[in-house]
Length: 522
Image (cartoon, rainbow, N blue to C red; front, top):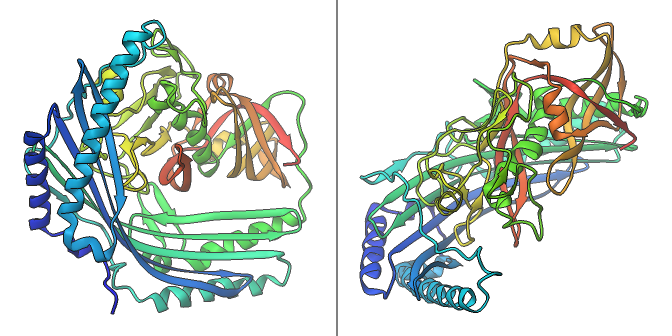
């Protein structure tokens, strides 16, 4: 029988040996003040169905490692990285592999430092941005830490046959809506991952995560609706749903029925009109999940602000350069607050980021004033301030990026029903669909699953294929209502970086009322 990796193989003795290895290497390597390492091992299983027929299922595992060395040459400190997948046949010589990675990363760090120093000597006016790299050391835990996963049903032992049966039953449930669908898809997966962080200062942090997710997609005519159910829990959420503070989903069968019902209703709805001028718009928490992701989350990731993403993802209107930023300036209504908080539940939850920084809330907008970025220990040194725990990677073998955690609009004090009832003429946008965002995130167009006409405080006509567009600051400044109905939703596929890293994140907020143009036909 072929060897297999199991999450239980990351033992206490192995973790202690890795910490000892990093300490020894830091003492033996030339000009190396700091070494850290990330190790991850995961197990997962899932099934999928198309057009009411079970198409595939699998039970898999994976492991990888990534390391960083910061070394000095010619007066410049610079990082070097190495990352590799680890197969089941290689596990017995894991320490040997990690030692080889550290040596490789060390050589790259020295070469990096030498080239930076030489470039600064030859081209001083063109290389002012080649800083000497020193981390703002995080407040690492003094003792080893282990954070357990949360679940009722252990994903590693839960039978794959039950997942297959649930997916098949959910896919077959579309039959009760008639044969009006051009296409339907149901997929569900569950798994557990163990993440270990260690460094040459003796820090040892293990975090365990359960992750269960289901996606439902249905199309009829020109109507397409998809939605995702997901949480850091076991497969119990597929059968029991989720009823927690801030997070609420129905069981998968009912959840899929809601998608099918929306397709059926939208198929007969007229296409949304486009307004020539701005109108009053009320947006629900599900729609605001994508809105806050695109126009608050990404532009407040400091690597984007420092132009590290410019070539392939864009910049941010919140930071032109280190001397010209929107920090401390009014960019929204006094009732607007937005923040990122890894300690909230859901996909964006974690206790430590991938350089061991304790997770904490980062306020981005407080009473309409822009107050700060998500950062890393590296970028906090460049920009100033303390590291705030948002340096994360999709896979340990990849170099981490600054990523959202749970990035949200803060709850307000308004009754969400009254935010609609007080509108004489306007539109209500329900559920998010597709974003189209400018390069620096200063304006946006985001489509909704449903658009409703508001007339005399009542929802009247339902439209399909509509959304809204606005300049980000203008939209923020026009906000005059924030609901109490704060909710979190999963974003299952946020892509960032080159090569791209696709990550699961949490976003959300309450019902919001502002002004924007309604855009129809897409």
